[in-house]
Length: 101
Image 1 (tube, rainbow, N blue to C red):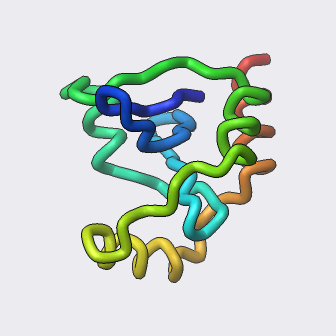
Image 2: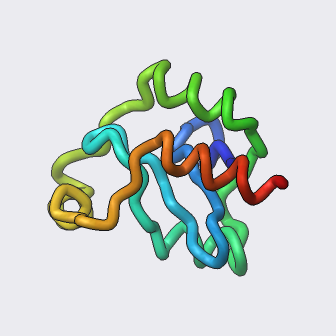
């Protein structure tokens, strides 16, 4: 699990599950696959990735990550709100813990 930032700005709580990266979207309360962050994580490394524990990720989520800008992220938010494959935080946390074993 990672806290994804750009400078001082916290952007995502992310989980790498296999070859996919799922990011927590405060506006939906769930994790969604994020291909842009996946590409950055595996190739570009333009964003900053700070490893966090499941407990740390839970605290970041519960602490209230800021909602996304509804104008800038309108298309993405519409997709994520309709995402039938979104994962609940507990599903992601369980998957991360299972991968550690």
